[in-house]
Length: 311
Image (cartoon, rainbow, N blue to C red; front, side, top):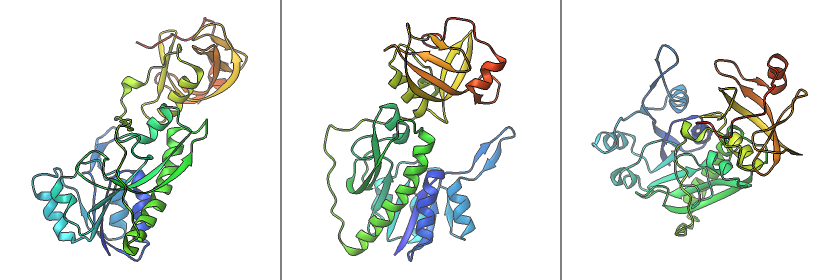
């Protein structure tokens, strides 16, 4: 089978590698245009492009999808099927319908829940104890196509978004492989998504970062896990903003939200339900991330606690 792959970030790479290693022919890879990165704004190719070029696969990087350019590129590749994994562009109907078997998306949630751009982070932000990967026959809606196959995974209570990303990335490759095999065997059974059961996993922004210590310890802990590594949860102390990278729920009790309850080499903070979290890693302004114990050794804390909510 001739397959075109559409994807951009690190999350997509295991799926593309699995296709390259398969008996199918990857006739083209669509990915986002190179973007400037770093202090000098050097143009940097997406991870998917790097892998495709390593294997001599034609790479297409259309800026727009609806002006006919992308369709002409797709015609050059002549695919029977398109696999879409975190591509980052909305596909018009003419693209969706061109391959013989249409376009199949590998989405990092258990649809219909968590449609949208950031399902991995929102699974943690919402306090879910499981998520997964769903393969879907794409239509012109936003993650609304018929479901094909899915696989679940547990979310450990201290797993952060970066760790869950890596787990789901590998799981996505497995789900994709099974989906393509079932398509060839004629055993796929598409299922309509239930209506009214979806939470939209919107793109993340720094507006989500400030911690409100009036929330429960679980909610604060989930924010810290869910926003790691970007944009990171933040908190204010002595007028300075800190990025909070890692925490655990301790079981200790405090007296008021934001209170620092233990300064003996540990940084425990009381939350709105009077349960405490311990901050394990943090990053002061213009400094590198470090363990809380290392920070406290050089920066003794003598005040009452963190601001209730960063403004």
